[in-house]
Each structure stands twice: as structure tokens, then as C-alpha cells.
Image (tube, rainbow, N blue to C red):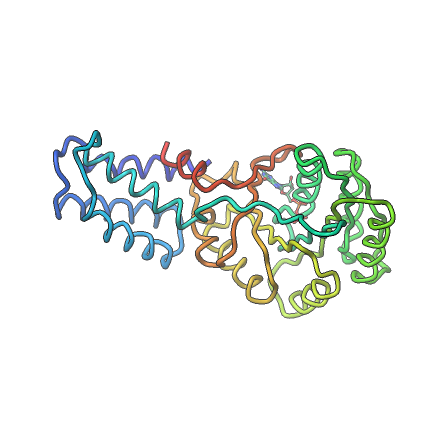
Length: 296
Ligand code: GDP
């Protein structure tokens, strides 16, 4: 994960190695190198700017000599500011309501929505001891409904059947009623994905979201698309009251531009990372852990 960026950042810090103080010129050089590393990682420009402005302001007040070399003090500052820009504190799911807590997932086709529903179902069942029901409101692709059924079997959670002849809002209303009667804690709703964000898709999902009124609406996005992931998520966040983002395919992402950009661009927290094709590869997002891994 983020191997290229890790290597590039480590190289940028070399500028300060062996220096016994932070000077205007070596700070400038280090910041220039970090900037280059972030650009190569496809981090959004405005994120790089805000981040480096913070570093630049705070680097002047750094106290070197209390057990930290100038290079270490600078790295520590980068660590703190990166953690801040990708989310600060970890934010978990809000499930504190009268059950069933409805969680709706949205995203473009291929982002990893259906897989993430199954991963989340397993996570909630195993880690949070929840009784989970899943349903597909993707009435455009019969294969999508079948895919969810297969995955639900695999993770051993209940599947609420639907067909392409049903209306998405009716499907979810029936599933919710069933979940209430059968005392499910959580209802996970898969929605239709499209190849692009278009008006029809947005209108449809807005209507569904209003009707279902989920406690969590999570946008699922492929981290391999770099800063585009953040901009796509922003378009959704502008149209829907999103409560968070699931960033998938982190395992194949050497650059990290999406992970570093999403929070700042959307204002919404990343809540989970998809880190593999297998069904048990969903990790709650902890900004400080991700940054410490990133810095190696
Ligand atoms: P959907 O169209 O958004 O529902 O996408 P799918 O759930 O069908 O996923 C599309 C592809 O991405 C599938 O081949 C998944 O196995 C793969 N995928 C999903 N999440 C991850 C992940 O975190 N890592 C990797 N490597 N592959 C993933």
C-alpha cells in the first residue's frame, strides 16, 4: 500500500539528514521535495497547498535538540499534519438508533460496492456482534442482485430477495419492515452503480435516500483513481447527505492520492478501507495508523 509514496517521502527527508539545524534553505528544499512526492502520488493540488502551508507555518516554531534531530522533528511535523488532513480522529459507524440501522452504499459501477456490502456485513457480524440483513436495490443488473445473494451466503448473513421488476424504494421499504419484525440490528442496502455520474443517477439516489433515511450513507470509491476519487466523492457529497467514504482497492494503490485527498475535498470522513479481494479485507480507517504506515 502506497509504496511509491513512502519511498518518495523517505527520499525527501534525506535532504535534512546529517544537518544540525533547520535553516530557511534546507526547510525550503525539504518542502519542495515533499511537494513533488505528493504531486507524483496524485494528491489534489488544494490538499497539497493546505498541508504544506501548515507545515511551513509550524516548521518555524519547531524545537530541535530535545532528543530529536532536525530531520526527525520535520518528519514528526509532516506526520502530524498528514494525519490531520486525512481525518484527524478515526470516525466509526453511527449505529446508535432504534434498530434496524440502515446503511446505504452508493458509488460508480466497479468501485467495489457489492463486495464492500459483504465485507461490511461480515465485519459487523464478527466484530460488532450484529444481526445483519442485506438487500440489493440495483434493479438494472440482475447479475448484481445474484452477486449479493452469493456473497451473503459466503459470509453467512441473511439476504432479502429483490427483482429487477421492483421499485428500489419499495424493495428497501419491504426489507426494512422485515428487518424490524425479525429483529435485525443492521440493514445494508446496495444501490445501482453507473459508469459516470449523471443527473438521472443522482436524482434516483436522492429520492431513494430520502425515502429510506439511512443513518449512514457511505460512498464507495476506487482508490486507484487517485484524486479523481476525491472529486467523484465530492459530487456525491454535494447531492447527498453522505456520512462517510469507503475507499477500496487500497492493496493495489502504490500512490495514495485518493486516501490523502478525500477527506479535505469532501469534508466527509473515510470510515473503511478495502484492502483486498477476499471478503475479510475491510479495515476501519485510523488516520494515524495509515500515516505511520505511509511514512514507513
Ligand atoms: P460494484 O460494481 O461497485 O458493486 O463492484 P464489485 O463489488 O462488483 O467489485 C468490482 C471488482 O473490484 C471485483 O472484482 C472485486 O473483487 C474488486 N474489489 C472490490 N474491492 C476490492 C479491494 O478492496 N481490493 C481489490 N484488490 N479488489 C477489490
